[in-house]
Image: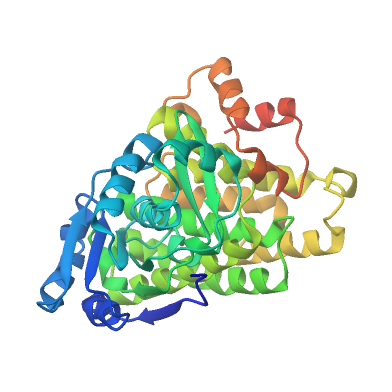
Length: 381
């Protein structure tokens, strides 16, 4: 089965419609993949009481944030044993990615899973229905055709049409229960996705339009969402993060995301916070770049328009001020914004982060950076 365009349901309390949605897919057996704490804390668990008596429901949350292949394998064993009609992923980006991976890799023989992930080959079909319910406003995973998994310290993306859900349920009330730090980290991740989508090499008019719409909503709501959450701010963040998720589904992310995975893995920094730590420096470097610094596929006029749009959205007078405005926003949200504050203490550690950067994301960055230039950029963070 190759999934079609996902159905999207939106609204406060929409999480309670998940059983009706799933049972409408003729599902008699359901596996709910969810975060260890967020499922109860967000209120998403109230969906369970709405399942009918004929639907067999099993829950699983045997994985950590930023899961690796060792946690994926027991999940795949469970899915092979249960053979659910539908997998429902509920939680932040890690929970949604895990649900996607279980569906996409279900039919890969156990001994071949690592090789399949490393190959990078697209996975286009799956047999199991997939419904995704985000409990954070930030990852956009419910709108993308890829998922992240680690093998050791190396991050891999599994991609293909099989990772798009049949349906996504956006309930803004679910995102209000996280800590202020969680809301800030997920929120700036969404902002970063929108910014990177605007300047990405593989961006296109559709992705840029989605990113602009999403960023307007995100930037209008993020301070209240983090500092004094209310339904209006949660709505802006839920819809805005979904729109930029759809944008990066087309454009993918760029340099700040490329460097974030090593920061997260080595220093335990939340993914969105790790992205934010270098995004301001990328903005500064991009503002200084000339036409000769751009990748061949990037048109200078379109690139400049993207930088001007970003400056306008952030309230900067020109692109040279965008980085400062973004860093000030992140600090206002309570995020430490220097690498030294999160434990990066030496030049050798900085070089290690550059060496661990995700090559695919770097190739999508509009400005070319040598390893030495990236090291210098990180040294200023």
